[in-house]
Figure 1 (cartoon, rainbow, N blue to C red):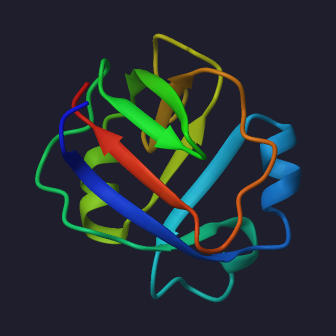
Figure 2: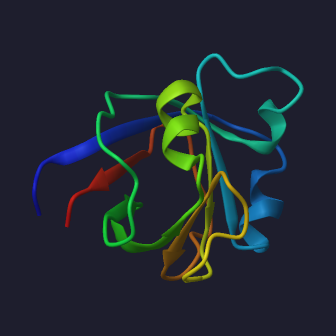
Length: 122
């Protein structure tokens, strides 16, 4: 594995995150997060991200590796500006929504504060 393109540390997990994980989705948003959406998000302290989200990159969550299969049109811009993307664990090859990043692999059972998410080049 190469060095991470981005490293996120989860600082808060909203009360509805577990429900979204059951629907194979995880919404990420960096601090500070608007209060009206915090309960739906895994809030993180974002690191630098100067790359572009592309199919083929790898996301590491809870020591599991997920290959990116599709990226929405505004996902990279949203991630750079707001630390906001929706991860969808469905392996789709076409992005469902402009801010969605689709991943191949089993949906995490839970996300906890203190955990880290990495975006890797391979």
